[in-house]
Length: 320
Image (cartoon, rainbow, N blue to C red; front, side, top):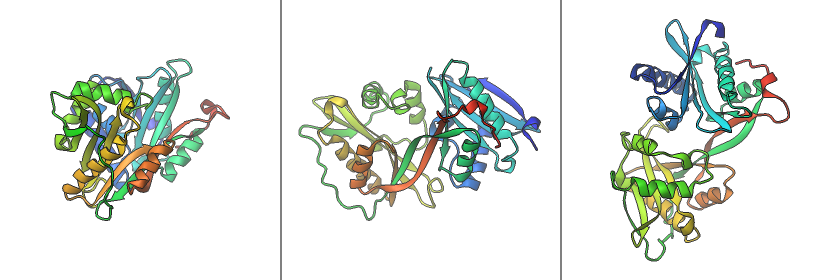
């Protein structure tokens, strides 16, 4: 079967519930083969989100969804994409067809670059990107800590700082303000909208008891947000995650980030979990060293592919 057998469509705006279920099923089929989810949390939340700045590309053969790509078109400089092809139809041209259409959508704005995430940094993804003339432009590390063997951390809160759980319906605006300041230069986290936050609060995993806010004199200085993954997502047992740690720039240098990370790990340990993960950019060496001191070690990586500045990606031959 080749790409010409596939009907390729593009949709701006939310997918219907039934089509979104087809995308989730495709992602699950692929994850069962590769051992890693092909789509991250944000694209899955954006499948049916009316406010999401997303374009959905679908490849259908004989009524069956065999390929999907989601494009984040919220920026005038880059389009970030995540792509999945049914394992039974790899090397048939479906992936290349999706990539060509993604490049065309990115090119609607002059000089806007397409960048594509590949989760797990699998050899097949590297080969696909190489054939398409794309190179690694960013690396996101997954780090893991053994909560059973983790040693006690001497990471006290700064003087006058107290911690309390997040209160849904009351703390959203304050948290988003600090989050935006904390991640002002982060390409994803700093853009979290009210709709993005509400979507996460609606997820089954959301637990305000594991979302801790650090305050001094009623002013929010930072937070640690934890998450618990069910068995099967990151191994045979439940796994915790330090989902977001953010500190207001005015409160940096006080040791608050380290203290919040320790409190987050304490909370996950109290849930009976034996391991926890987090994600951080490989280029953020300060954060990597901080997490290593907390006992985290590198466990995997996601990579982002972008144009090879030494040659034109639009002239590359795509063989996926």
